[in-house]
Amino acid sequence: MTIRTGRYVRFYDYPEDQRLPAQRDKDRVLYSDAFRRLAGITQVASPLEGHLFHTRLTHSLEVAQIARRIAEKLANEISDTPTNSIDRKHIDPDVVEAAALIHDLGHPPFGHIGEETLNELWELNTGFKEDGFEGNAQSFRIVGRLEPHRPGYPGLNLCRATLNAALKYPWLRSPDRNGKKHRKYGAYKTDNEMFCFARDDCVNGNQDTSLEAKILDYADDVAFSIHDLDDFSRVGLLPLPELYLDSDSFNEMIKDWEEDGTHKPEAEVTRYLSIEDNSKLIQSLLNAIHQTDYIGTFFQRASRKEQLSGLIRQFIFAVKTERNNGEYTLNIPIYEKAIIGCFKRILWKYLICNPALATQQEGQRRVVNDLFHFYIDIIDDEDKRKTLIPTKFHNELEGCSKGSSQDIKVRLAIDIVANYTDFQAMNLHSRIYGILPGAVSDIVTY
Image (cartoon, rainbow, N blue to C red):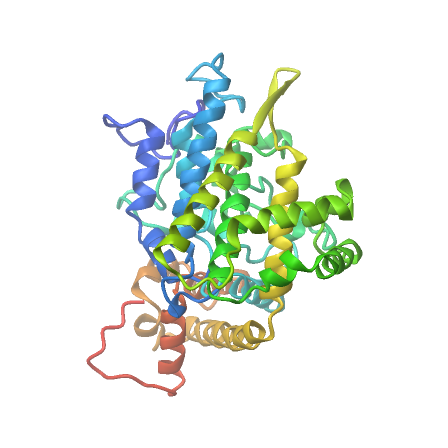
């Protein structure tokens, strides 16, 4: 193992080449099975519904592009920072881009519904409330342990800077069930050694998010709020004319928003801006994506691309850094926060709470639940486990016997289910439960 100092060191010794360390990390993620798998993972709509909707793969690529442009801009503004600095003042565009490619690797089949279901299954089957399943923690586990790169070590063996930048939530799960750090966290306790390596100073209890991770988080919000809203407005699933033309409808939504205590980040709009300000804001924003009788002509699509490009440019150039007591922090103007908040709230109100999506998600929950119970039973079956547990998890299976603790078995079952794409999960579910058994000649490589 390397001497544990320096921003660009790796957990396991490995010779470098002509690429910079973070450039090498980016290449490793791009060529990984885990990254390619994201093409089959739900963003908001299922990838099976066609190319008009973003998948986790296209979303991740766009987050990486936006994050890199922001990092390049800010790095030029912080020209006095040494390139070999190991503190969190440094901004490396390659590190930020690599971290952005990592950030959604841990999403299970069916996106957030799969995430919620697997977390519930962990808690029901282990009783360990201080750990669970969380997409960000699973992303960290994939690059640190599960994804193969070389026979001599587990994981991708990424450098410290990249691992730290990928930690949007740089803490382990808090036992306080009412706090944010119980719902969102960056690593599992089983991956604590790699987590401490990434953080370097975690032994001192420092839980500050790095500047590079904050850039990634902001880019994620920008890509999600703009592109997902665009997807669903183009296919007619958002009542944009209603919000655009009827200020009463918009004001009613804002009032509901103020009274809803479950979406605190989005409430920043109403905390700082009046209803009149919000009404003007939403009308100017919807100008960018609303066109009467949108039917997808060349001119309409080109005009929309132009408007959205200008909006993304606005988000990139609005971000600044501030220096307080020698530390750089990210400064996002409240107006840009308000735009993101408005877009997120519209998506939540008209899409996430859509009954059609809710019924689809109920079926997805059942698929995830059934697959988990299938594997948790198979893990203890000496006769079946070698043939029914996917071969890519046999290394983990070797350390999991009948005498192993329940949390080890549950973590393995969860790792297996979380590894599938939407289609793989549905296809395998149909196969093992005899709904659509398939053919003996089918190649099952899951």
